[in-house]
Every structure is written in C-alpha cells, then in structure tokens.
Image 1 (spheres, rainbow, N blue to C red):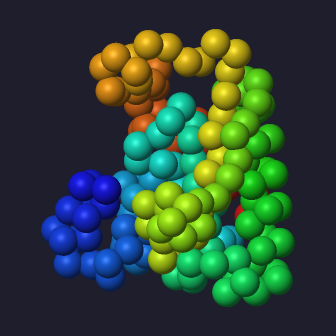
Image 2 (image 1 turned 90 degrees about the vertical axis):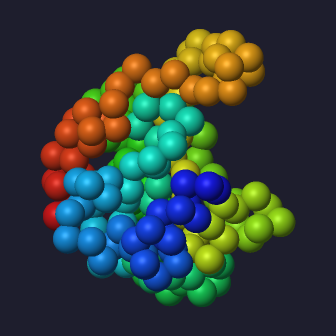
Length: 156
C-alpha cells in the first residue's frame, strides 16, 4: 500500500496506479504486456511468484457488473491466454487465479478491479516469507517482461 500511495503522489496522477500506467507512453516501464479492446495485462510490480500478472479492464471500474459483457468476456479469454503463455514459456504447473472485489475483501486498489494470475510450481514455497517477511524471486521483472511480451504480442 505504501508503494501504491507514493506512486500516485509522486506522479501527480489520477489516483490509480493502473490508470496512470495506461496513460504512460512507456508500456515496458509500466510493465504493461498487452492492451486489448476492453482489457489490458500488466505484470504485478510486487509478485507472489515469477510471472504473476494482472488482467483488468481499461476502464476504471471496481465491480464486475460495471463492465460490459464484452469486457467481462475479454477479461476471461485474456486470462486463459495468459495461463497458456506462462505454462509454455515458464513451465508453470498450476495457477491461483482470483479477484478481491472491494476493500472489505482485501482489494488493495478497490476502485480498479483486477484479476490475479499467479503461476505455481510444486515446492514453490519456502521459509523466506515467514521468517524474513520477504519473497525471493528467481528472475527480475524486466526479464519476465521480455519473456512474456512477445507471447502477448501474438494476441494482436
């Protein structure tokens, strides 16, 4: 939360880190992998695992019912494509996929809904999050971006 608050304050942006990324002219710096007609895909800046990304509407909406039917369809189709890309490129053995809708449900940014796609591998848990209050990732975000970007470019 500290990062999200400070990012908005320092950018003088809209108040939403996701919307601020969308208006940027540098998708790589914003970690945006793909922009569709209704949705976009962005790497999570603070991933639970390597390849953790978010699929979300282009519009700043906080509830599924605020999206169009076409937007909800693209959200799910894009999430499906993302799991295929991550499986083929990174060898993911499973996924946690979900949304926290509303502050009471744990949404860190409740005004802009987003679907988490978190790749999982057998044995991907370790003691660091528990004892060190940190997560160790085997790959830099920029490297993950470079691996996944060409796959998302194929979506058109």
